[in-house]
Amino acid sequence: MSYEMIALLMFASMALLLVSGQRVFAAIGFVASGAALLLYGNGAIELPYNQVFKLFNWYAMLTLPMFIYMGYILAESGIAEDLYKMLHVWFGRIPGGLAIGTILLMVIISAMNGLSVAGMAIGATIALPEMLRRGYDKVLISGVVQGGSSLGILIPPSVVLVLYGMIARQPVSKLWFAGLVPGLMMAAMFIIYIVIRARLNPKLAPPVPAEELNMSFGEKLALARAGIIPFAIFFFMTGLFVTGYTSLVESSAVGATCATLAAVVKGRFSWRMIRETSMKTLAVSCMFLWLILAALAFGSVFDGLGAVKAIESLFITQWDLSPWTIIIMMQLSFLLLGMFLDDTAMLVIVAPLYIPLVGMLDLGFENQLIWYGILYTITCQIAYITPPFGYNLFLMRSLAPREISLADIYRSIWPFAAMMMLTIVLLMLFPQIALWLPEQINVRG
Figure: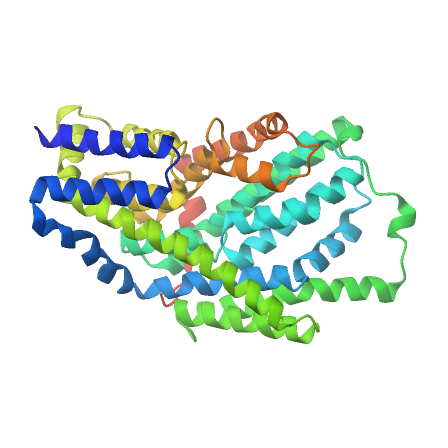
């Protein structure tokens, strides 16, 4: 059997296991281990275990539980809820103001956590019920929460960009700064869309009654103080990192410590809260580690088959494709894989095949791997939120109130997916949108 057929059989077997409902890490790991035994004999049983040492040698992996913990403790301590109340008062008088406040909340949550799942959980449990109670259109607000949560993998500290940086051997700091402008640009697009929809049809997003927003200056000041804490944590953490006083790992530890101190200062620290936060952090961190471990094993078998060289030969030598055609084909393959895999699994399986090829292409500008990392994250998130098998769609359904159906969720996401596609097009036309900021700043890590 040819190497190409072996590779095709591996992907087909993995897809079959995933469609049958098996856990992602189990399906990937099983196919990797089985293929290694069949191809290389009994000695290949060590292959999955060797990847453990490779995984634990990635020093930047220490940031993963730190950032996840920071986001969860800010949510569990009620700081995220206080922040939403502040945005509720500031933007409540504007048509669509609560939806705009929700997008801004998601931007801040992204800056605290780095995961789209955390932003969606907070948005669905805090913002969705409030907007429904105010008469907001359920399709509109479902899209707002899902679109806003997608910012979590782009705005620093993005956990996915940390993983990409380790695989692509690129500075995480440059990837973070490369994702900042596109992330804020997407947030601005979402806000403009909400404003236009609310002005064209005020029934979709009615303003909050004035009597609910009339309060004393002291009350408004107290709400403003609630919003200062997450901003202060973010700027203190990233400020030390940008100025070179701390490395990436040290910066994540500073953020986790500051979040814990914030819970203590607000009088919301308790052993029950710290236990629940630690358990959630452990669960999410272990999920990531198992996924990465399984995918590393899968990738090592693929690498042994010469898959990277085969892809380079197919695209460049045999098909003679232009560099931009190859980039577009890569993005389309990520959209397809996103129907079956989450973004982390796609990253550690497919990225090792594509990243060397991106480095070889002549796209006409420098730092191509930094730029492609941003392109990858947006494309994967589009795949994550689009039917029929987008993971975030089903997560949203499990978190949303009963009156929001799966059909409503499916209908809600298309305008936001279109704006994310527009962001990708703009990044391909104007790469400096992502590359300008990291070229101006030199930081450690």
